[in-house]
Structures are given as C-alpha cells and as structure tokens.
Length: 437
Figure (cartoon, rainbow, N blue to C red):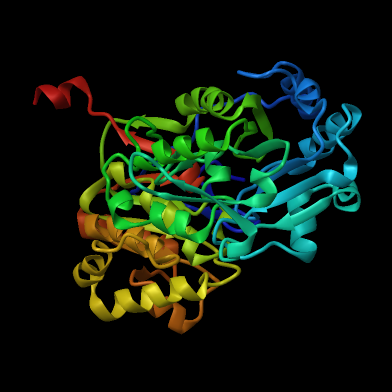
C-alpha cells in the first residue's frame, strides 16, 4: 500500500484513505508492542506464575465445579488460545469436565449463538466437551441477590452459575473503556454477568455524567469502585487478562487474583494506549475499531467519545463504522428516536432523575458528549435511511470529501487520524511554550 494512504479499521477490511491535497496529517497510534512469539506458552506460564494467588492447578484442586466467563462477540478476545489449556489444567487437578461451564458475559447485549458462538469460542474442542451458555440479565431466576453496595446502594445481582461455582474465573481483553476506565477483569463480572438492575444502575446519569467515569481512569471512578465492591462481596474470583496489538495478536497476558492481575495488565497497556498529543485539532478522523466492534451503530458511539480530548471545541469529528449488523437493540433505537423528538437538552433532562436507566439509553447519553463539543459525521455502509435519520449526526457519503470540507470550513489543514478508533486514547498535553503563553 502506498505510504500516503491511511488505513482505518473498518469491518473486516481496512478503509484506505488518501489525505486530500494540502492536508497536514497527524497519525495517532498505540506505541509499538512486541508480539508474543508463542502465545500458548505464555498463557501456560501465566497459569504457573500468577499474580496475587496460587497457580491455576493448585486453585483447581478440591473444586467440584468451575465457571469461566468470556466476553461476548463485541470484543476480539483470543479465547481460542486459552480456553482449552485452562479447562485441561482444571480437569487434570480433579475438576469434573461435566461440571465446568463457559459463560458468555453478555451484560444486556443479545446472546451469541450458532456460527457466531463457534467464532467467539474459537475452539471446537471446548464446544464439544463443556457446557457453553449465554448470560441473560433479564432472567430474574438465573441470578442471586447479594444485597446492595455500601457506598452508593447499587443492587448486586449476579448470575448464579458464576456466583455458586467453586472456582470462578473471568477472562477478557484489557483496553480503554469510555466509562469504566479499562475493560476486562472486574468488568467482565459486573456488568458482564450481572442482573439488569445492577447494569441499569451503573448506567444511570449519576454515574454516566460523573467527570471521573472516563477512559483510562480508575482513580475515583465510581463505576470502577462499585465493581471492586461487588467482586469483594463475591469472594474469591480470578482472572485471565489479555492485551492484543493492532493486528489482534497477543502481546501480554496475566493471570491471578482478579483485581491484582487486572491492574498488572492495566499497568502494561496504559503507557502504550494513552498517547500524548501536543495540540487540539479542528478535524479528527477516527474509526469504530473495525470488526467486531463496528457491527452496530450502538457500539460505534465508543469511537465518538474516546478522542474528544484532542477535538477543538466546535471542531468536526469524522468516524467510519461499517455497522454491518445495523443499528443495535430495539431499546437503543427507541432512545435515539426520543433524542430526535426531544432534542439534546430535553432528552438529557429525562435521564437525570432516574435511579435505573432504561436499557441502552446510556449510549445515546454518551453520544451527547461528542455532539455537545462539535459536529459528528458518520461514514457507514450498513444503515437504512430511517436508521440514518435517527443517528442524530451528520451522514457522510464520501469520507474524503468530508475531510476536505472540514479543512475548508475550519480554515485549518491539520487533521488527526486515529486508525484504530477507541483502542487508542489521545490525550491533549500542551507543550511548555503553550503553558507559558
């Protein structure tokens, strides 16, 4: 590919963009990471050298059942690398194969089934030998009630298949998350396998509008603090945490006690994901990280929020997302219709008095953070005309033309390109000269 082209993550095939004539591009990527030469060996080493716990084989001895959480299809976790060796280690230590469950932590997302479930699990042996099931947050009988958190009164309902297992392990991907700071670890448990009231409390305006509930921040983050309290209420929980590069190859893995092992993975990834940028831009071009994150418009909003720190007020944010699966849930569609009808201020006013958010309306609330700051333009291939109308953003028919128009409108040729979208967090760090001025 010619060097002057920039490849934005888009579906399964990158979207190649040639910057317009006169454009002065700044390309913002994660820092380089070394791929693990033997991912399977690295995973086994993690099992044998855990953080904050004994090794997996010792944890498994004497256990009569186990539940392993995996993220749903919206996250490209390399499940095919670690599920079988994890299960085989448990069985070798005496856990009955018939008593091991792999539970898809769907939160309030739809279940993953059929060919999609096979793709998600990534190993036919696992599907053939253990029970692989989906979490359903709205099934009251499937959860146990652990009371409420002491700090903020969040109701704690957790899928009983996980809560009642002798050995509980969450697995996932550690990446920036636009509300919880970082994904993975404790987040795979709550909201991953939490009751809908727990999830809807997390997504109420009192959490969502908190200035500390942002990407890459755990200090004082109310969502993170509630998640930690829920983990401690559960008791012993462990985690396998993975970090992948732009090619989706494994670069880091940790295993051990869920809080300690997750923080170790965060320590590894934070320095390469948060990228200091010495200026703000009036034109920012980004993506929704490609497949599987850009399957829906619902997930696309994450890519709108992550780069806001480097978008100049009144600037233009152009995002490319395939939306191959369409819009998102019926509840999200309803929230977007209400936004279309009420407008941003009245819509937000309907949220602030609620202790329980309506399902998926929180993503509409997050979209407002982007549209309050500047103009958002969406380039997509996957939405109907009606769905495009209720996005409540400007639609781009030609991303090259949108960039050119934004440069002209703002009279500024400087354009920031973020090819990997929300997996990269640009942070405005002014230079010494800027601070002196």
